[in-house]
Image 1 (cartoon, one colour):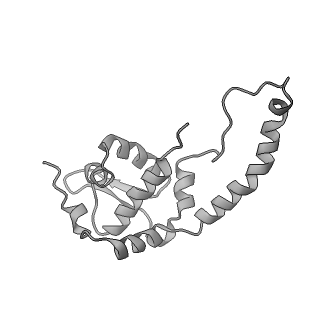
Image 2 (image 1 turned 90 degrees about the vertical axis):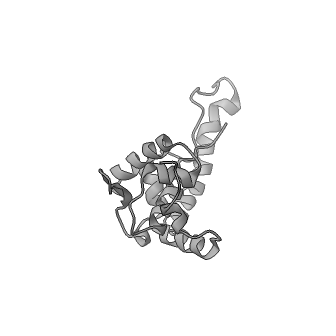
Image 3 (image 1 turned 180 degrees about the horizontal axis):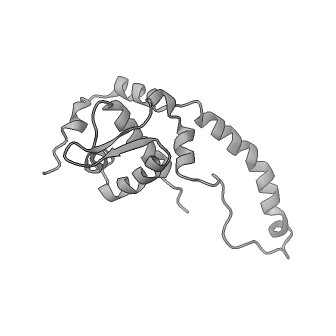
Length: 154
């Protein structure tokens, strides 16, 4: 079973937009940074736009930009924008209630995992896109301009 990469990919996109704050970037340039298909990026950007985390502009000078200051966007905001119901989800098929484990596992796990999920959400609220951008700028060996001037074979 694979986990979802949506939170990580969306965080990557918003961090790129924060780092090149004065530029609007196309989904192609954002996809270049992620090394993925622009369609993947556009799907996520729709959710981020609906949550007022990015703005869009059409036309030759169009593209995507952060809708808010990077200091005001937390990882929890991104988590919420992606409409993740719960970090921990049960299998779609209910367990066998004739089994003592199957009868009780979901109630016991719910009670056990709720505090862990609450702690994670609280932690996500403390980390901003500005924090991540600053760490990346401090560690970057490639100039930030490479995102803006990425040769996409246009």
